Image (tube, rainbow, N blue to C red; front, side):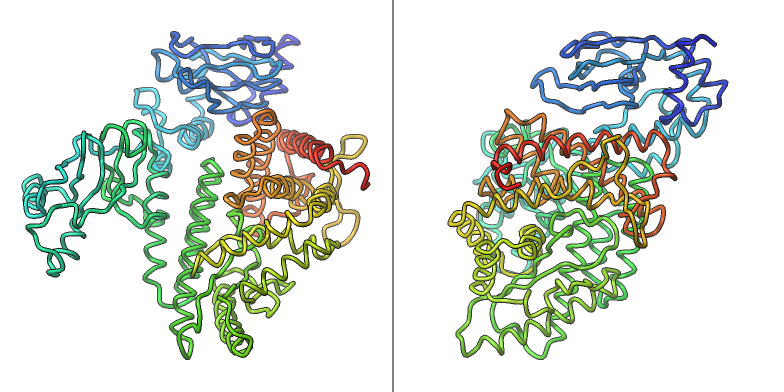
Length: 630
């Protein structure tokens, strides 16, 4: 074997699916690999051009995949990533353009080598099939793919484009309810769209007819506008099953209107119903959430959450995008909490004396609680008179105690630091919470800053959302009145620098139970979390709590820094996935990692994430002029 082939072999053997090949198979591939050197901004292939007879692996640098019409970055391929294989299997023309977004070296591998050495290896073939389904929006249909498709591919139907009805039944706003019902009966459909100039303005379903007409509430001779749901929830034609599931769950509906550009103000193209994405597995997320709503005890909810844990295992094993996994598990966790609160209220001696809201804080508030970790939550209730305060707080403390107890049964352990709604410190009226936030911000010592980093990631779960809006407004008012607070929060965000020593070695724990292990949460993830929180607070917005979406929002607000923000987003995705994989592997929180157990490729991938930590901390130090504080 020649020297170049040896170097290629040493590189590829660290990355799947090449790591799954036999030495003989991989050696044959390496002998025929072509090497491409690309300067920054150089095109490798262009959308609309005939597909080359090869696919690619990034050796060094990074390759961006862009949509031709919008120039939007669809994906960023880092060291070891494969791209262009789906296009090779599809044939025809490229649908995306590939461009070096930094100086790069890329290996290309022909389709003949792919068919001879990769598709013939069962493990490598299964890995690729999983990767396709996890990272693309639809699954192509051609002989080569069908030949290598496994039963497990059905586990990824959520990421395919949804197969919606292309000929939606519609009527005008002047149509009577009786006429609409007759049309639905004749066409054998469960819904009808009310359209104007072929744009959807409302929808009627069988449920509407049953609840509003069969009960006699409204005459069947009235116009359809009397009972239609409006405005409609619309999505573009390329909606995935995953997006449809999340939209239906979030909006508590069973039908989505499909329009040309995804808004109600464009041409109606179809309708997607819950029936169209009928459950094909027992542990489908939407089924679990429906079961949550029917559950009568915490023990039943525990069983459902354990099944959701198995869903997570499958998603991680088969490379479902981490952002999708977090959304699904967050919805399950939220639904379970809501059901527990419903049951707890029923079990109380009387109804709540005033309005209240239950808040998830910390990682659950950020929708990043994929594994079973301890609880972090709080309760806020409406302002009452001073004479009624103690009695009102006592009621909500008892309610919160029931909620915390049942969440513990489900699998979310009681918080060791007692940061829960059952703690009188975290069960307050709106005005008391406002005073608490003001005190923390006015006196930003280490303890108060720690509390801010936890409580400022709150998310409304149950109750009166207006109370939460009032809290958010109070936080920003307090910050505005104390400008220096953001500087202290900035210093706090810098307390954990990029976790590499002078010699580029991982910084590990020096003593204690986790001696010589790497703390991925404190040393790698929390610096990115803290930075995103600080920067989004400085923009005076509470619309984003999730770290990934915070960085995406920041990139939109500051396009001049989008490269830094996208790098942080991508690094956090990788770290979150890595921690989840470790937690599932060792049946723990995944926080502490034995570096010796990792492959060279995994260690390299972790190290690559640390540059984003350094870059974002450099940005913070400059923006908030923190050198004078250090």
